[in-house]
Length: 498
Image (cartoon, helix red, strand yellow):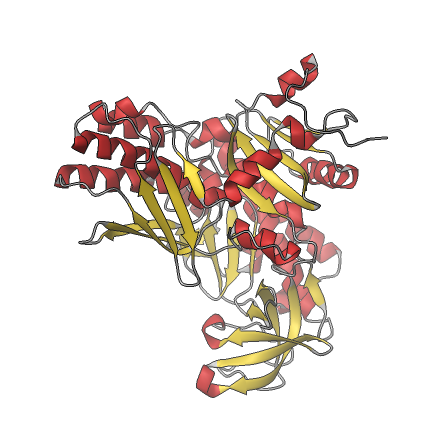
């Protein structure tokens, strides 16, 4: 039986523990922090991603047959009932081509209409959950969605990759004139189509809604020869389209309030992000590089091939037996996509997993408002209701250079740390950074270019807008989940704003 032991000033590691604690290869840790299950991605002994798993079950991603109960014209919205008495908010902006199951869509949405809706935000703080009628399904390579014939490509895909992907999808009949072919038989593989027919599914009577697609960044990852990659991508598309058509067909015969697709398990999104999203950088390079050759420094920092991350050795470690079983089953299902991955159940009664990787120290740092830099400077991160403010201070930095070079040095290091902290803390919305003021226009441009290159590596869309006349840098980052601080506070009701 495991037992708790008090922290010691020194711990003697076994050879296995010594090998395990090395984080040159990325590791995803699922463990407990102050009675909360958390997930941490550690690389080169730096925390590069963190999240707390909610105790309550999230419904985000679930698909229901809902009923329009009340239309509020002055708000351009309506309320949809997805189960007995459970109401959700639906903005009409999220209703382009709804999939109605009780009548044919004639351009109008009426009270009593039964339609497919997908939950995009859970109920919180007295607000109802939000849903959309623009249904979408996704895997690591594609997103299929109702409402548009257009096919989009991730901005992170190079032009040559986009061209080769368009070419192979067109050759298979999936694309036509740059848009998704609107035919069931063409969008399904021959085997899937035959299987559906053998199951008695009359696909000919299926009213196909307008379908569009997005090709994701993972489609560019080299796994084998180019021919093998393209074959794998086509296979992934057919797999996703089969899921969508099965869902649409089943919806025609299900009763109102039926749940057609359950939400993903809490850990699935975290695992997928760990396996596909590359870090900001392996480690912060020498600051002297910034002062001697900015262009080369940016190249070293920001042009790390995605394939090196995807194909590198990665490990998921947990001390939770039930979660270990779920993780194993999930990764077996995706073994063709995620290679070089291992799952480990950590069991050691003398040394906990949290202590082995200094989880408490890393999370305490991520939840604290001050972040120290190697040069002696520090950041002050202050979230407010409207925006997040980050102040850069020189602190105890030794001024070995001229004043301008010293300011550039601390600002460049701060830029790297800020790009990392945005991700670790999951900061979103408007972010204002007060860098140390610099007089040189060239240095200001260099700082902005450097910061822009760093945030491009973020899996969540992040934009460095500009620097204001007062020297404040404006950043926006899409909100996908609660900030790390709020994830922790909302469940434990603790005040961490000290």
